[in-house]
Image (cartoon, rainbow, N blue to C red; front, side, top):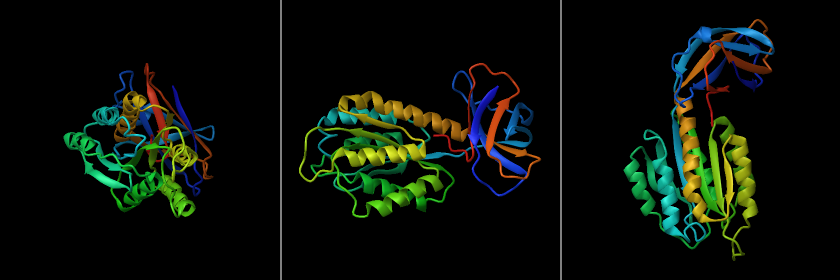
Length: 291
């Protein structure tokens, strides 16, 4: 059963390599009984010998950043209902922090697995009339990722409006943000809620759209652009389910160590299972990151 195909990243010439595989069954549960003989690795059209297959788990840490400005909090009850539904749909073990971005990034609930504390934090979100610092919040979140040396995959969830302010060092900081996304395998998810009309001192939604599309494409995240706050009630749980599946895969996967005859850097990798599994859902990764 062919599972997936990857374009290998440039690497020094070597005869041994590694990649990661996650396999979910028809019930969306991780397959935990794979053995080395079950997996075949094809490198540049040549079959390679699987030397080792070992289970690995790399947890996720989630930072949720919410725009508490006039657009998102115009329907505050709906906004809070959507956030609660999002938090309740997350895995119980997922370490999560909650921030607001108006008038500047501010922690509401610091990193915790206490679901009740996070839900209570939603009620602590205070509406603000100022324009949100959505870009600064992203950069600050990446700063915290940079300082956290624990072995994990960071996820940034931004819920913003088209009413925001620019950063004084946009170009430099954007390059820094992009570099960190790649180096630390950060996943960024982005939702933009449009408020309509023109506002004094506001930045046109083009900036949020440009940055949102850029960071989600780079990171493998999801980007959504919506016009009504009521859509958040169904949309945010969708994001939570995607995050949950990503967390499930990344905490239940295998590292494949393979050996190949050719010493040249590989260009193309693929893998297959020797045993037919009905409804199997498999993903391959070079570093274990499966957004």
